Length: 167
Image 1 (tube, one colour):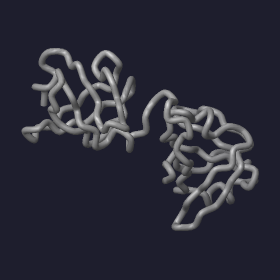
Image 2 (cartoon, rainbow, N blue to C red):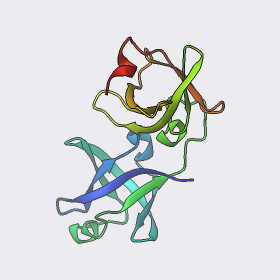
Image 3 (cartoon, rainbow, N blue to C red):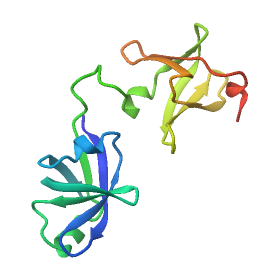
Image 4 (tube, one colour):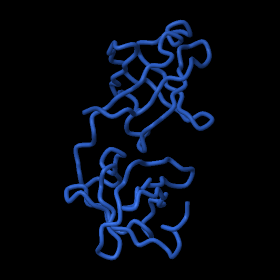
């Protein structure tokens, strides 16, 4: 299974740079100089090598060995980049697909299931469908999400009073 790590938005300048919307929490590793990216566009896979990457207005500007001018960069518009999941399961953090489907435990009782992950400016939010069908958003921070155990299929939360009653 490969994970989407970014998407080409548009070309930048005349020397072949592209603007990439990053969808990984480790862009400095995934888009490091010399990294070979797997790009998919209109069902066609292509490998591209990163020459340089730099932040720009909340996105990333990439220079790729195989892209030398604006015309070639324009041809990459909409391309999605994919990478294999991390190899070290003890690595910090979780991918969204590892969280979706986990049972949510509060005070030793199953109260619902994680149905999605919503990116936020400060931290992600877990979309949780409570046993009664109500949807709540739980901040994915250590003070509230006490433990995550994908192998057991559950996460334990310690929400502040009233959080689970919010709409």
